[in-house]
Image (cartoon, rainbow, N blue to C red; front, side, top):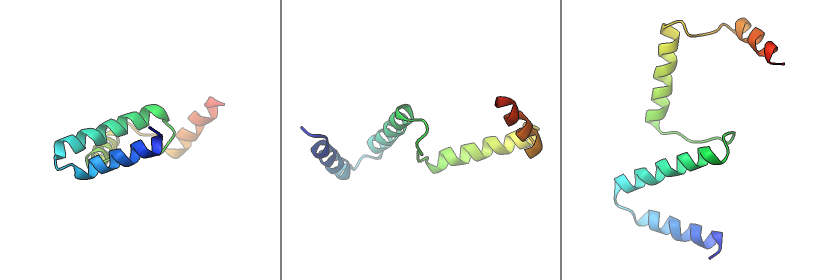
Amino acid sequence: MELRVRKIKLVNEILKLENEKILGKLEKLLRLENKNQSPREFSYMCLEELNALIDNAENDVENGRIYEANEMLKIIERWH
């Protein structure tokens, strides 16, 4: 079966889903697979993931785990 037809069938099956647990598992699987395929591509995240990133960043600031812009520029220059 060609890829296009398989995609259409899969979308139709997903549209019929009434189980949030299964839908959540599919979303998670797609996110994981997309990350594994090409780490440079943009990937979507759910609100909980975004909030976790924000919480981690705020924690880093509170605990002094940050760099000023000029410090970061010096670090980047050493990469070359």
